[in-house]
Image (cartoon, rainbow over all chains, first blue to last red; front, side):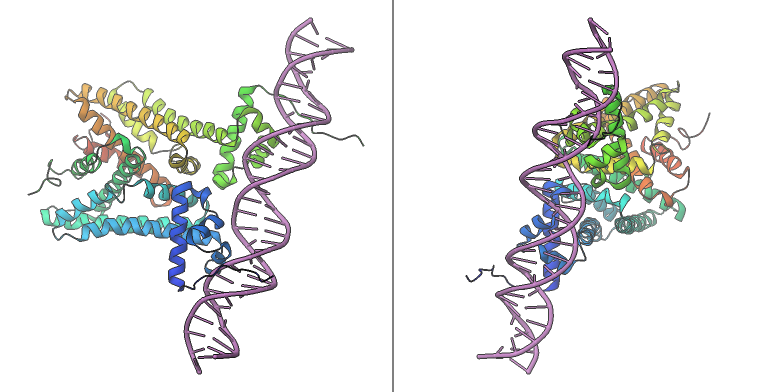
Length: 214
Length: 214
DNA sequence: ACGGCAATTATTCAATCGTATAATAACAGC
DNA sequence: GCTGTTATTATACGATTGAATAATTGCCGT
């Protein structure tokens, strides 16, 4: 009896790791964290379960890599949207809008974010990843704010800049969370428009100063 | 061989259900959702595992009851803080402060909230519970805002009231989330003070109009 | 073309999960 | 005090989990 084994093809380490992480995210998005079993992930990636432990120390480490991938993707999408413009005002506006329109306001993205958020409390590794991304996001907001107020000719102390950044970040996060959780309650552009108006108020700008085209 | 069984005492249905729910929350707060197994919960409640299915259809239904208990607790704590005062301005202020001080800004509360949030995407029952609480919270904010602007003598259209409520809620939620996740980054009263100043800006009030004692 | 390294598969294992069922002990009503 | 009801325990079951080990197959260097 000759045993019939699956035929397979070898892949580079980077390629396999990415495949496995992508499969992990697919599983989580579909069934939540409970759907992310080594077997289901492997099946989705087109490999067998044992291979996971060849590329990762264990399932936990792979989940951490997946979390990192999700947060990096979100942060980078928003930052890239801001960087595409030259004028500080437009950059700030685009940054806010990007955080409240797809692909960031997206059911799948929220599912992934939500699945990982609870691990922050339990696992220090996840806490570190969160902290890292939160501070990076805050730093980006501060940079955008400094440039904007500089262009506007308004003085902005570092302390107030940081305070603004924290509030702005909280507002955007909150709108993103509730807006995506209850997507059916909001129109297409309602979230982004609401955010722009709110940020104008938050920064004590004149109405329309940020949102309206000049 | 006479079998020696545990001695036990009977309890009323309401009592047992509450014990089981409290035990569930303890388990979740300690080990996350993965620590909430029927055996661990039963052990913590001082009963055996089988009893859970005598009071609940299954583990899922008990988790839903536990989620409802957490959200009710949070909402009620905030609302009660607001209702203790008579003056609309003080009520609004107290409501905001209550949402950004213990026991709402509390590591345990956040753990519980986070553990459940991911279920909203997967399980419609959890989505319904979330929706219910979100709308109740929003309604409370609108009521507080209407009273406040009425006292102030400022006109406030229903549309703008709702818009304010959504933004205010998002801001408070975001500050609560990040502030509790990274509690070590913020001072004792920094969060609440920051929220009050931000809400003043959000509502286009004069600085100190909400926060300062008269 | 071929030998050897290691990427991948196949299989097994012990642990733990939620649930179902039957035995039993506590308590209420009489 | 006895009896019936049922809350509670005890035990068992099948499924599933993450991990460990051994077998094998693809592929690169020569």
